[in-house]
Length: 138
Image (cartoon, rainbow, N blue to C red; front, side, top):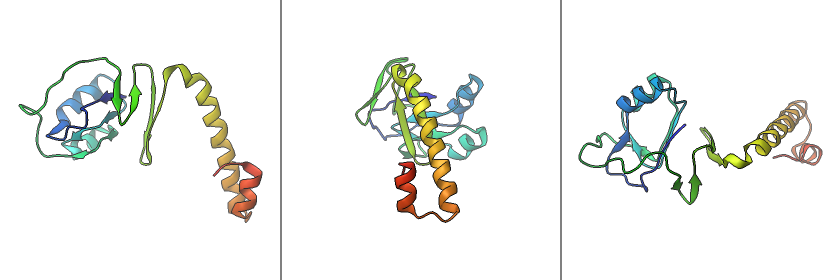
């Protein structure tokens, strides 16, 4: 996951189709930025999940530039460093510090298993309150 911090600047689309093509060729699986993207249709055609504050038709030439590479960055009060796990989907983004990944992954998988069991119980007619008491997830 490529992480781009812009300190929330929204003067242009910092990431678009050209950079998207480059990072896909380099093996990136997604992009997270606190600024704006552009060329959204092209990013979607590339199959590159992109999580941003919004979109802009403006390119970044003469409006924004790269200050530094491969640094820890802060987004909305969360520090993201090389080696951290970025999990992102339509519901939002979660950052797992690299030193916690080995303990967080098994716990997350266990919770997902309990949620699957609870979902099946709810489909079979168990009440939500009873299912919560039994499975302890919500």
